[in-house]
Image 1 (cartoon, rainbow, N blue to C red):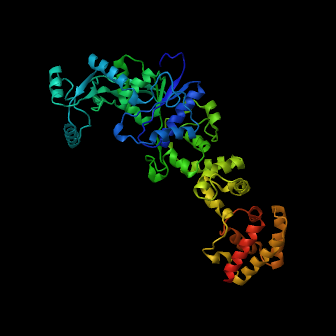
Image 2 (cartoon, one colour):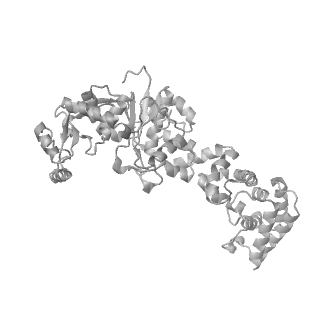
Length: 493
């Protein structure tokens, strides 16, 4: 571990080649929690050297997604810091400086092999059932041979000269000692022909210069780690502590992909998951406190998170569990908080004004308690509340107004009677409405469900809705009686 006065420094280093994947968000969270739990520093570093795959708005998405989840960074874009710049594309001079040291020491060499030759090599290896890898064709070129090739206009890549014998071993904080035979490693590329460094080279230079003490990343990087250890050794640097986090799998056991559902933070945000539920869920993907407790606030996670409780086993991504957590958190919010969080979805659906008017917001605050228990996602709000805001209910299937075992005439009689009773009613509180409507049931000599169902459909346009008395109370006399009259006329006409 680096001599850093005991100060823990971790980094999350995404590539802006797409929107932030949920796996990347989990990696960021574990790094962030580790830093916060230990009074350390969390760094956001942008590894933007793969220019061919750069996605224009992905950097914005990465930063906004981390902010939405509540993960602030101590150093990085917008925050600054003494170890910047924090974009690898702005650190090329540093990589050039250190690659020259490797070339001078003989630990790296220039490779002039064409893409056609490498493609043919891979095909030959596959045909002979040999493991793929570079055959070290340019490893021992003389200076004169290199100069001749460059004079022909060939732009080389720079490869690391992996030792041909021995083993490379590192200690993983989760898995213990891990060893690789050097003969299984090929001479990997450090600098591409466009002058940009590969991940393998840039990340060890940056981790060293930024004094990173712990590298926590997905277990898919384990095969790359011996390459990084060899680079640290060649540079004469001490590597940071390593911890490779368990892979996230779908419930079917394979890699989590779009065919299973949302996979990016942006998609989950858009669907109406709330950050408290997402953070809680992500924390449980490979970590647990005691095997029983499942609900944690971000503050609580900061206080109890330890690497010792991170599992080596794969984590299973359960959309059902996430949905359950999201519903739990939504139900725990105040009415005003739910209203504010639902507002963007309601405005997008043109249900309320943007900006919302005072009277609309006051009305919305009366509606939210009627749907809060049923909300699994904030995006469901428009569908659940739209009938409250409609000027007129359109009955696409008027037969829904007629309950089973009743006819049109009886249903018309129910609606007419309800209209008259509610028109004369002055107390539209739930307490005032319930005895009135139950009395109507008795006077008509019908069952409660037979009377309440056509009234419900008449005032909401649907067979399932919040409680009848609560709904009528919120709708008020004008909307309720107007809709009852409209439904009666539909049946008559």
